[in-house]
Image: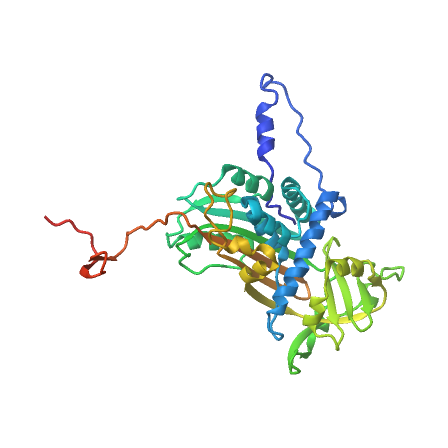
Length: 430
């Protein structure tokens, strides 16, 4: 079953209010639901966005891999990051917007084309395969001290289906609001992204959550799963439970190999195989670099051009493979990495321009947190990701003395302290 978190119903409601106002007694035929578009029906502009997002994907993957220890797992959803950054892009202006555009590889796509393509891509991905669960959710929380630009709120609601809410960032319970949203939209696989309390200087959070759950079209035979040796990058070894596949067993009654169970051999580079999920719209492709090619070096050579080329070269036929079961979570701060990818200005107080998000601007990006979960077993795959962007303001701070505080009475020029005190209970004694 597929869940679509992006819903463009506002215009439908308006149309319904305007139609047939003078003929309320006339019966009306129920309207047919909008036809579900398949991935093969993406528009040319939507395909350009997919190419841009994939280019961003491999660029981000390479940079994160470069700073990840060789013996550490890594799992990210650049698509989740792209959705969150696309909302930030809509809130930015001037050089800040240009820098986010360059980082996302948007190129000459107009803002409207970007927004419509994200909405269209969401609709296609979440509806393509009714046997696969995919949800894409977005949210914007903003301080009630600042005025959110109405046009920005309309854009993120309309094209990103975002929940837009005011939030008191100084209230300790505000972290529960965000973590509950995260847990709800990742099916409980990522229960929280923030510890309490939130940074009191923050005035906004942009968030995206992606959840994916799919069964293999043909599951692995659990009777074949057994322990074997997994060799680590440093030369040591560990035991892991491996699932086994023989494409010979996936043939149809006529003896033909399953066209979606495929493999590719590139001498001195890698061997790979690809398996379908559900009704075959989604798949996992596994690349095993040659023993002479460290995995980090292979990642550094992974480009969108090679990805498109390799996808067209996979073959159906006889091959065997074994894949370890795995399940883990991952977290990374993307601040420095995104800055190095071209959007450094967005992280600079006084230079960042998010005047399309808040009236008067004065905000910047303080941090981008990316958190994921993945489980791959004999039945299928479950994965979730959350990307949150948070930032403070250079506008006048709100100092709420609603807890014990200290005060000092001093001489201005010398700094000589004349009185110092603490107010633990603000009584008024006569």
